[in-house]
Length: 118
Image (cartoon, rainbow, N blue to C red; front, side, top):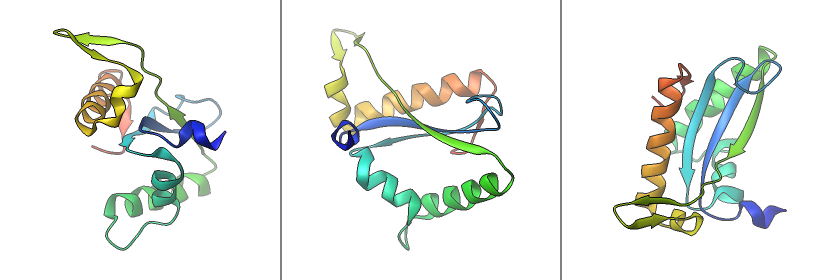
């Protein structure tokens, strides 16, 4: 099961009361390797990982308030941009991950979500 997440990914932390999306609070991110590397960065941020420290602090507050936090991994299908095919294997390229991450951030912003990374 761990190998499924030991790869490049776009992910979403969803803060909710009872069902994902009910609070409309999310954090969208991208990683060269989601697990264990990126997840470990949120659970035990290093001294220079300011974003991870900020997110951990927010998450601790949400949990103290009785909220739940789930992690979703984006599954991308094939997307074509001017004959360039974006396939799941394309996520190994940081520029592709940033493109997809930005598109998902904009989608959530358009839908009225509070984005913890803006």
